[in-house]
Amino acid sequence: MSPLILDEWLWADLLGENGVERQKQASAFLLAIRTICNPIVIVKGSKFERKTFNFWKNAGFDATLRKIAKFYRSEFWSNSVKTIRIEAGQLKPLWGDLQKQVNPDDHYILQAYFTIQKCVIVTTDTRLKPLLDSKNIDCKYRDEFVSEYLAKFRKMQAP
Image (cartoon, rainbow, N blue to C red; front, side):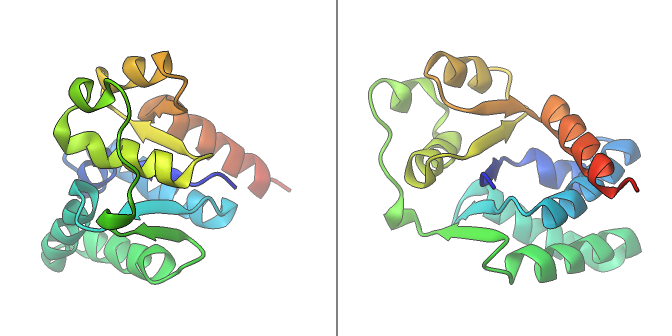
């Protein structure tokens, strides 16, 4: 299964910052990823990892968030089959004009892509996706990808 590089939308959705419906959808997405077995790529020290820690910190007072945090920790964070961890020093450098065209906060996403290869970037960034499409980098918008992924998951679950 192709590894997934998710950007910070996951944590905003799981925290409920984008509404209850997106929180439920993101939770279902994690369950589907666990079942379908696409590993999640995590770059140590990245914005995604920092948002993970922030999520865990904020989960302490909310039963729904605690449940999601516990699930993510046990099923992904502590599971080397479901997570590909990359040290910052292992990342391949950006090539050509990408370094200038991509927001520095997002460099790790592309560096992880070039390091892992044969993976999919899932983003909400409307500036990033067209740029990556023009470079033939496999990038999907969050809404379309998550909807299709959940439909695939439901189909697998049907008797």
